[in-house]
Image (cartoon, rainbow, N blue to C red; front, side):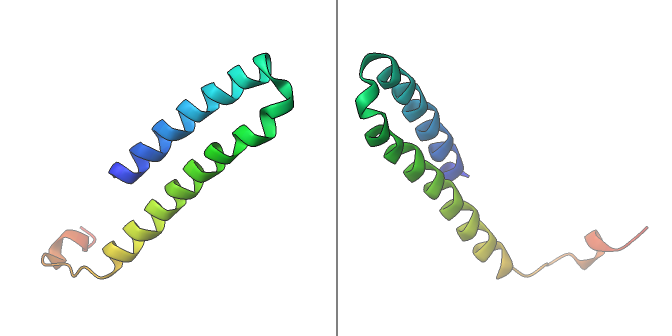
Length: 68
């Protein structure tokens, strides 16, 4: 969960920086896209790790998943 929050925070901060750079120095906008992409990759990594970790868990309460 903290990886997802960190990726969201990084995407927001780098998006603000990208917007400011587009106004102040439009010629350097492509260099500022790198942190946005890296924050997105971090979010995808967090999803993959959480799926892998949850896939190895066993259910101790099988009655929770029965249809009532």
